[in-house]
Amino acid sequence: MTSILDLSTPAKRFRLVAVWEAVTWLALLIAMFFKWVLGHEEAIAIPGMVHGVAGFIPFVVISLITAFQLKWNLWTTFLALVSSVPPFGTLVFEWWAVRTGRLAELSAAHTREAATVAV
Image (cartoon, rainbow, N blue to C red; front, side, top):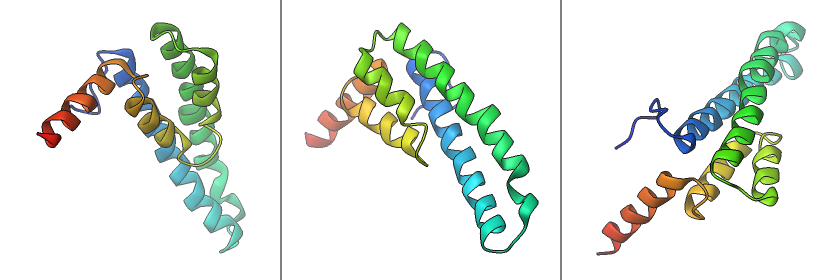
């Protein structure tokens, strides 16, 4: 079992930032509930800033770096960038990228695990 804090490869760094972006989305969604349902206007100020500065921007930067390092084509890079817009899209993209072989050793590990389970 690998640690999510293992940053030794581009694919592992991408995974960490994708998960972090989804966590900040969750915090923002919870804050939006407090704002729109419970009427606390100030509820989204901090989670919104954290999501933008510590979630969205790092994900875009890491996506571009990973695309360069793993030699993604333009379509895969575009999908990675677009995945940061809907809530939890980064997780969906990461799962897809692992299954389709676009995240290097994470995809290879996924294939080995699937072969082990099938035996």
